[in-house]
Length: 148
Image (cartoon, rainbow, N blue to C red; front, side):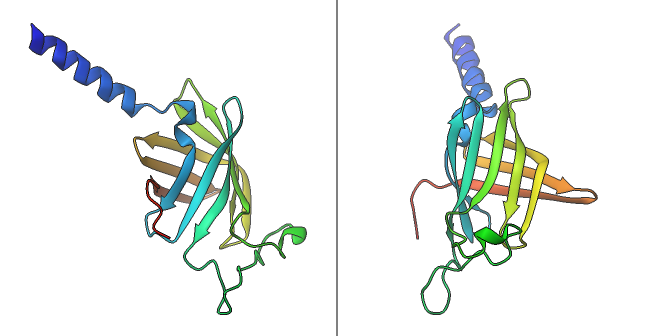
């Protein structure tokens, strides 16, 4: 009988971890190649925003922060890439996922609206985004200990 309850408890814990809760996105996330991080913060109920937190090539040869020269908003081009607004998301409870309302890629200077989804399982974030026939899937890991 105890084994039955233990099995049910393990299954319940596993299922609870499989499905994202709204604030699971909060914190710093690093890409698979460990070239950059994004920091997610809460804006309001089920609304979150992210900024570029760190980049392996975030400074130029003189040690100064690299500027966001490719930004489509000309007023932002004289600002460092690190700290730039890169994403807005909304958590959809029925789907247990986040919709990407806005995404900006500083490396290409491309900004898109309503362009994909994010799912979180434990310490792994899977971003599926795209426009027209171009689709991208990225995996990020939660930053637990800063190494930079």
